[in-house]
Length: 456
Image (cartoon, rainbow, N blue to C red; front, side, top):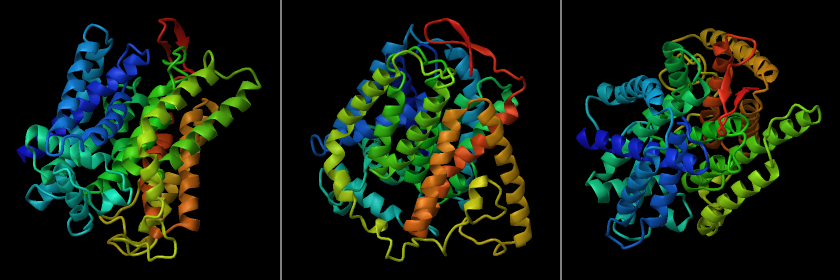
């Protein structure tokens, strides 16, 4: 237990500090709730880039510790809104931690999550063990993304946390960081609706189901996709006047490469393309708010991304032939068949996301009534988001929908289920975001240059 929660504190602390320092270097002085996701993305990239240096030495742990210390020094005296962020964040973090601890309480012990549902952890533990001793392995040679595994190795080398406890701690930390990141969309709400909204988006049903079976890569990718859409949203708001306003989104894309390899970019590229298309169309009416020199800002972000992922390009090519991508294979994994896309709506009265409607304790009509209610809310949310120019949120929703269709048509049930899980936070965000709007126009906020402006 101590090892797991020590890992949670270490991962969350490093992600928050390093992420906020990165956002600060991009020019934002105020606290941003995108920092948890940006920090985790950088943590995966940095640990993977340093874990094999020095063999058995704790190089990656030392580098992370140095980055954490440098981030704390950089933020000292520069960060604005820290006390306000603490007041907003601690209830979310506490409730998320309690929720993430429930599977251990139900099991009656701490250890590997979901051992009766998902046997994949044995491969992840073997890969991490070989990384910890400076050796290769099957996953390494196949180009499998090992960023999260490298974080676990850094915890092992730096803090003496066991690999089992490290993976469990990382998985719980993601469950805490996801609701904290969702706070970026609910900052103007009062404490109860703000906390509830962040928890529902960050721990929506399918994400919670994947967490309970110990699937850490999918929950990290869902977090990065959600944060990417919110980063684009912020680029037209508080970060509008920053020359590096798109760099945080680029850093999230970097993290996605080291967590999910090239498939992770499908959701992010789709989100950016749809968002850019909407903004270009709107700009013809003279109402776009992309800020000064958007092309130059996008080029700087792209350059940052290419530099940081260049060492991984060869492994991304190798990963293309990984067995999971074979549409002619069984492609079921631990599933019974295709998972219903209605599960992304967050209303699914079953303890096992793999079950078809009616196979659980609730009759099929109960499933479909709940799904119909949630789908109605989703349509309402889409309409309201369109009226309020929430182009980034709608772009993210469109991208995850297209990714699911592609996985369902040309993939396997296993990849289609992952697409549903990754889509679910954005679906929940689209439903809940309009419910928090209390006025016809959003309140004024201050841009990074200090000028008061209205959110569009």
